[in-house]
Image (tube, rainbow, N blue to C red; front, side):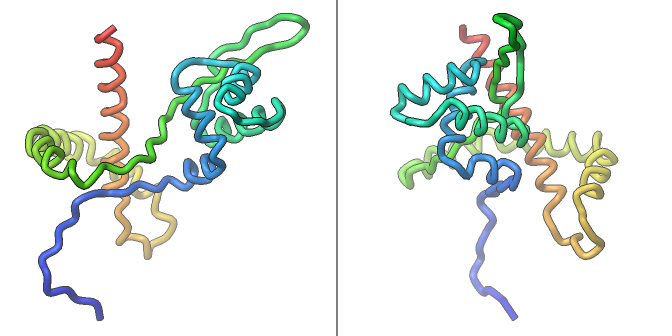
Length: 179
């Protein structure tokens, strides 16, 4: 029996998407993803950028890693160019992987920012659950591999995915408007 007499609150959610984790388990793939997050490049251009970073691999190895990222849904082929008897593919990342940790000294500033946006986040969650309850329920049902998995946090994962992706779009749009 596991019980706790101390008051302990959930403070954060760590997301581990196995599809993403497996794809970027190789450090060079994380570098490729970083390179392709800035602009669409060919495998040859990615190979050159990796060489600039001191990574010495064959171009075929780089192509293999790009294909693994593409197969995991992290990189898209965004353009084809015909020429010299062949087709050149241009790849672009559709996902950014952040693997950082905030310093402990950031706690007060982060808490202040949380307090500032929490009402809007609560309103967004209310909108999602009220207006899209059926869609959320369908997604959760598709995620449950069996009857015994009802205790998993599938709804939380769906809501967090929506909020995370909405954040990415809003952030991207705000960056575009700065230029």
